[in-house]
Length: 182
Image (cartoon, rainbow, N blue to C red):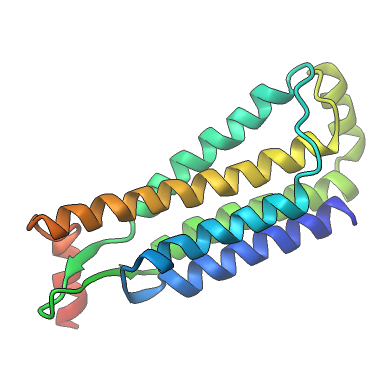
């Protein structure tokens, strides 16, 4: 399977599950949070064939994890949470939230396509110059980025859930008031 096709399938699967479970007004449940983590775990099982650690492989994969954590926290910040009159907890995922996920997913797919069609020689030269062992390192970097992003978003949701259960104010309440007034 080509790197582009693998990236397309992996990114598309994760993006679809995350957006399907988070866009709009959604109740916060354990299964909702686990669904995305399970999807990424399945993607890892399918697409991570090895764990390269030669040269600069590990630092590159750590950059992917760091990038995923940052964007996962940004996505989590764009997912306000509140307690409904019924006592149930909800989030409201909007366009900004979706945009963060779409941009990162599209970036992974475009990189994979470009690696095969636009900048193959440059990527080989970069890999040699910076001691990156090959395609598996890049694939892992993007899969680990996805996992880190999902885990950071999930941690953000869990934090909001705990805060709301303990009687704290709604997270992003101003935005929710504007949304509900429309």
